[in-house]
Image (tube, rainbow, N blue to C red; front, side, top):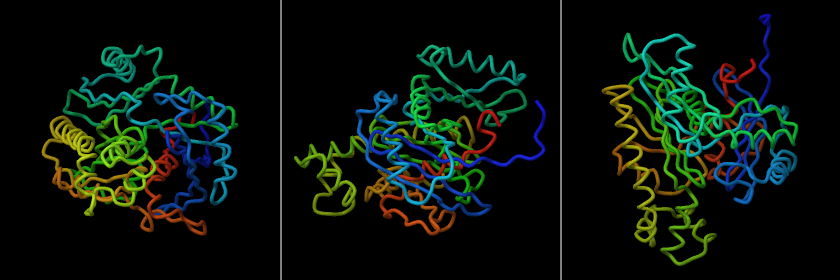
Length: 358
C-alpha cells in the first residue's frame, strides 16, 4: 500500500451504552489541554441489553439518535465513534511467553486463548499487546477477548444510525488513557482505577500503560438494592440516599454501611489481589501511589474514605477538570455528574495506532 505523505486525524467521539445511561463526548485535544465540544447523557433501561449484548437494536438506536439530536450540549461534528465494553464482559489474561517472531506470537496468543477462555475462539474477537520484556528470554503479554455477539450488536446499532465504529475498548482502557494524559505518573508508583458502573465495579492497575484488570460482578445497582433492603424503602429513595449521603457520617451511616459492606469488601479483596499480582509478576517492589474512582457511582459520599481506610492507599475521585479538561463555552453538567463522563472522554482520546485501518 502506498504510504500517505500527509495524514489528518479524523474527529471521533466516545459513546458508552450502559444499563442505566447512554452517554457521549466529543472533544478537541490540544498539546496540554482538551476542550469538550459536545456531550450528552440520558437514562436508558435494562430492556435493551442483556449480558452485555444489545438485544433490542432498534430501541437502542432510537435512544442514541435522540441523545445525539436532542439531549446534547454543544455540536457534534463527526459520525466516527469509539465505544466501550465493561471489563466484566471481557476476558483478560496476562502471561509470560518466550521471545519469538510476530507470527509465532500470534499463534501462541491464539493457543493461550483457546486453552484459558471458556468460549470457542470462533465466537470471540481478541487482541494482545506486549507489555514489557520480563528478561532476555521472556515477554509479558496482555490479551483481551470479548464475545462477538457483544461487538456485533454495537456494530448493528451504528449501522442503523450511519455511524462509523472505529474501535471498541474496555472501559478501564479508556479510563487509563485519560489518567495517563493528565496525572503526573511516576515510574514505580502505579495507580489503581476503580470504575463504579451500574452492573459491575471494574478495576485496573496502570503505570506507563494499563497492566492488569479485574472486576466485581456487583455495581451501583447492587449498592442501591442493598440500601433499599436494609432501610425498607423504594429503589428510587435508596438511590437518592446513596448519592446524597452514601456512607459518609450521618444519622443512618451505620445501617447504610452494613448494607454495602459485603459488596465493598469484594472490591477491596479484588484490589488487593490485583496489587499482589502486579508486584509479583509485573513490577517487583513497586508501591501503588493512589486509587482513582471514576464512573457513575463515583459520587457516592464516603466511598473514597472507605477505600483509603480498607487498603491504606490514598483514594480520591478522578478530577481532571480545569487542569486538563474544560468545557469552553458549553454549559457543564452538575459537579456530581462529571465522573460519569470520564470513560467517554477516554474513548474520545483513542490513539491512532489503536484504530484498525489507519
